[in-house]
Length: 496
Image (cartoon, rainbow, N blue to C red; front, side):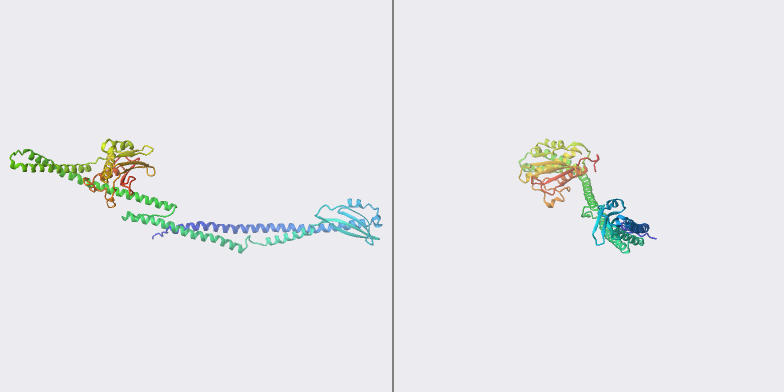
């Protein structure tokens, strides 16, 4: 039975939605449980408070009744005193105010309402008020002012309100009404939907970018070496795409270098075979011509013309043989290039040695960097590369009508751990039609060139782990700019 495979986008979406939904579900369950628990605790607590507050109300009422009876008893007792019954103005009313509990003021009032005598003391504070009790006497009345609480009615009303609220709380079965619970679910559901939509969009974006990487890799595998991902953005997938494109650029460059070395290897084999085939008949030809010229001893005047013709023929043959020898030597050079043997060298010392040639010294200007640069290279082969470029630059400048000065500069590039050597001439530059094939064997723009110098120079640079290229822009001197790139550190062995 085949296994069901889920796409990465679906997995990401489900993962993000579940990671958001599970805490929401857990929060809803916990809130419901906490609400029920809180409701039960609140109901129990409310019931206990109701009982206590009802007892407090009963105590309040008993206190009020007791106070009323106390006041009545004091009034009746005082109404039995002879001096007060007689409305004696000399009665010691102040002593009564000071000693009777709760009594603040006392007054003896005639039947017509006039006051015979009175005594009082101030209220203890704003929380207290007077309660007037008039006790009838035979010839008037005894007016008594007792101290009572001014906030007692409000306190009783607050207590009744608290009892009603507690009864309401005790009747609630859950801490949240159903409408609140639904609102809570809606408020939590909206973020879940937003997260789900965002996760779907983001997972689609990520999987599309990963799909672009996969498709590019497949295209490269099918032979489309110029395929690139070119992802836009600053996130990790964009950085991965940039790294992938950089890797493809490096692989393409390496592939081109390997292909170039393969072509050069073929040319080397051809060169060795051709040099062998050409060299064999050269010496007999030269010896035969020399013998023919030296053996002729005719002195007659009719053979003078033949003598001159024979001499001219000898010169022509000698010149052609010399040309063939030069061609053979060039082929031999290509076919017998030594392997690169790297060693640490000071780049400035190797380039300075190029000035040992008087013809080069007069036309060469060096611009070294601020700090010395040490590379691992084959000094002999590196000097051969630079000498070829400098010689070509001098010829190019002279063909353009200048003295043929050449400027050599070099700068380390810490980004790729390499050094770039720039050889700038004052010539006319390289035509666009020749740029693609200038490093191919037997391609040259000079009348006396063999077209192997640049090919050999680039092969040596590649075998050093670097490269030799023609810069796309013109040199500051106005002519062509050739760039030799060498790694600052690298393996000992040659690439060949």
